[in-house]
Image (tube, rainbow, N blue to C red):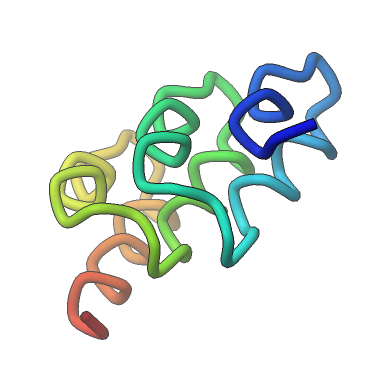
Length: 77
């Protein structure tokens, strides 16, 4: 199975592993950035493979921890 396929898994642990995986594509991470689960969005916010556009979107997330992580990751790029 590909990471993109696994990003649709109903199990939150599987989706979290995809969100933090260094081999996840920017497209897969963009999809996961819309996940209702905050831990998934946090994983995306910390992932350097997330596009700048995705990170900018997450820097406006309702969750402060996600916003801060996205901003830190943007600054690391």
